[in-house]
Image (cartoon, rainbow, N blue to C red; front, side, top):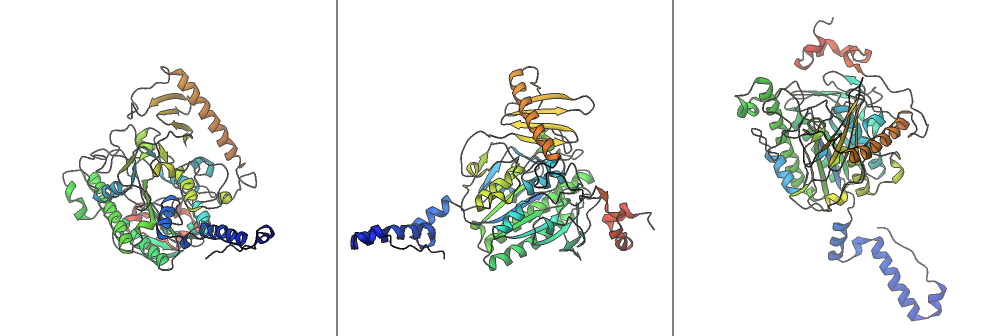
Amino acid sequence: MRRIRCMIPPAAAQLGWFGIFCWGLFTSSLSLLANPQDAPAADREDQDAASPQSPNIVLVMADDQGWGETSYNHHPRLKTPNLDQMAAAGARFDRFYAGAPVCSPTRASVLTGRSNRRTGVESHGYALRLQERTLPQALQAAGYSTGHFGKWHLNGLRGPGVPILSSDSHHPGNFGFDHWLSVTNFFDRNPLLSRDGRIEDFRGDSSEIVVEEALQFIAGQAARKRPSFTVIWFGSPHSPFVALDADTEPFMDLNETSRNHYGELVALDRSIGRLRAELRSLGIERETLVWYCSDNGGLPKITPETVGGLRGFKGQLYEGGVRVPAIVEWPSHIEPTRIAKFPACVMDMVPTLVELVGAQADSLLGVQDGTSLWPILRGATERRNKVIPFSYQDEFAIIDNEFKLLQLGKASKHYELYNLEQDPGESEDLFEANPSIARRMLVDMQAWQTSLNRSLSGLDYPEQSVNAENPEPSRWETQERYQPYLKSWGQRPEYQSVLNGRD
């Protein structure tokens, strides 16, 4: 317990017993401020409600789940009772955005609070720069134990997920994770995973496996009375779609691809139920914040469609490619059944969580693209004061509250402007019809692009340059370090399409 030591000042001593008495009252008040546990119980409860301490934090992310793929967003076939219950118990963001319309860039934004392009992660399979400062590193410094479970995809390797080797320069441990059970990319049933660099063979559904492993980590830290930061990145419902037979039964009238896609989401939802139930069994649900979202918009060629009537799909900057489901649950601090229309994004996770735990301001790079959502989570209704930027394959978009400006096309670029509150399906281009808003947003976009160019030159880093150590995207089966495993892995169904025909 922290104490404040105070000497009686000469002025108080000169007043005799009355001065000493008053000084004692003053220092007792200071002691209660420094040690809220010494305050009366009712006062402590008020302080707890007003200022979070060090909650456990669990970030959960699906892989390719579209905005329309929950029953609370009125999907015509898929039932997600556990996500529905989580949404009813916490805050649901109906305008929440991935960092980009594909996976690796969003993962980089989650960990840094920055646009993916600033971090060197231009598209899927790019490596996150070691020069970046990450949320798990900031939380480590704040006394947290950190763990990563599931898909990583920030080490420059493409192809179906394989265990991350201990020799990998960009494994999760080098970005602030004390413990990791991870795989390079998407993974399905009966996966091979890497526990801190040691390969282990698992049996069962991939979503349920990583949740069980994460719960063991969370329980272990709770037993030690240490706050934990846990990242669970599912491999579902990414292709190839391999669901349990029981999970596909409600979809037997659909084609095989759609049937297994939705079957994977059934298992994913069940794993969310298991996570929430076990937090309650451990008695730590009130001191644990759980934040759920997806890494990009929904997939095309799935029946029924995945984006809830929005325009576009994964790989596009239209709403269907970047708007995703999002729920934040924290029973002791977030009122239930809150539905936020506030536009928010994965870049907001870092400033929100850093504010909650009181991490050091210099624990992150100075150029950030997110804003804290803590006022919104507590019930404030306000307009966003910072644009949400997107940059993918030389195309750009920014969102400023109800308006969205897109710069599309590579050889010959053009602009489109939409009012998302009135036209969420982006069917009516207002760029020519509303020139004053178009001009204002063009200025905002160009200002952000100028800032991005400074980042691309390395000016965000202390070195004022980009180090040349980042690996270029490559296929893991072409890497020398993976050659010893190719023969045995060639018998595994998830790798046969990659390794067939190799000696």
